[in-house]
Image (tube, rainbow, N blue to C red):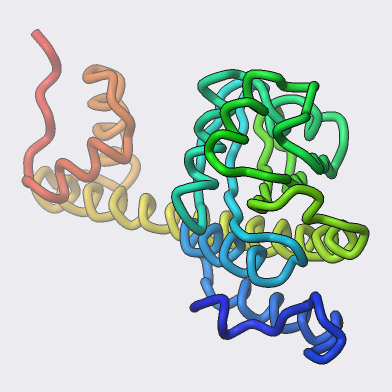
Length: 242
């Protein structure tokens, strides 16, 4: 998928906002449980859809200070998102926790985060527009838009960005849920295979075989699914430490 495939919401001559957002929703639903692909799609489509944006990055912020870049459209957003984690200041780390939208019209003149503003400006950022994607406990997801020009974002950018962030948050939640379900099913399959090996080899019942796996997990201080995976792969239970 490329930005050229998307209609531009910023001009009257092109598709209206309703069609833009419908196409955005269709694009985001195509990943089917692939969280990383969904994040990349959100970043690319946001940069192509929201007026004023040159680049986009998505980061997870943990405990208000640890920034984890997850998707980006180029080197600039990745570098700037990483910079916020290194300096422990910036729109993702501070104001986004207090407001769903943070706009920085002139990064070079920004006084809320002076060290960040100075270095981000040196990297070529003129203005920023940040949207909160989700908050789960002490973890936040942020959608960060970058322009190399000052004052690049206006009211239209704000309104379209809010609508886009809503679509993106729903798509991301759905992808994470589906991925978790698939992971849970895979774990159950592996445990079932391990139980079958023990039942056949030692003539155990299903409950007895599961008990062997649980005891081995406890004795080796390893997760049950890892014990089951080892047995299914090698045919052997790991030995407890002496």
